Image (cartoon, rainbow, N blue to C red; front, side, top):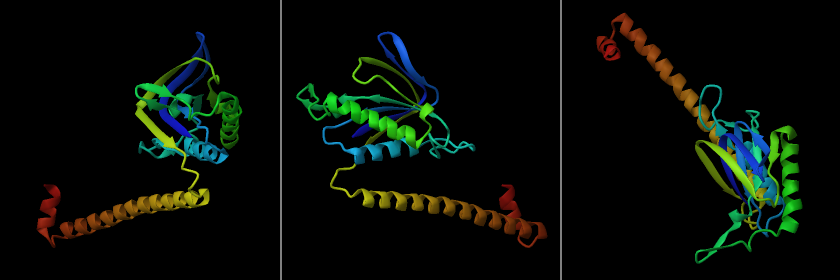
Length: 207
């Protein structure tokens, strides 16, 4: 399964000249389902959509908050052309899941997303329709995600993700401790300079 996730200031879907759904700030997701996809792929993609840290926090630090943490909206649009394979210059879509199977599968993905978040904040297009998707990409920020091959054990993948999260927390903590150490060092320098013990330190601070 492939997903193109775009951070947006707004996005909407129009069918036959009529707007059928729209969102404000959040993410617009183009979702391509392959013939080999299972519910394990769907769970992986939904988890990434809802938890991907694309937004700044209250202090303006980038890549800190997910769409769920900010209570932003999600617009999901079925996009079978993401499963395109080229034969010369001609697109071939045989790897995409057939519409008769893809429609209920896509509906189950939306249900999964709504049960994992706030249902009223999950919007979608119209499956199988010729749609005009209007996207105001914020950044621009565009992330492509592909679900892992079936040969990878989902439990091992989840373990790897948790290990990565622990590394990120440790890294963040390390920065904080480094900042405290620097503050202590500056305090010591300030004490020495004010006492006149090392006049050159005072001069360096003033330079």
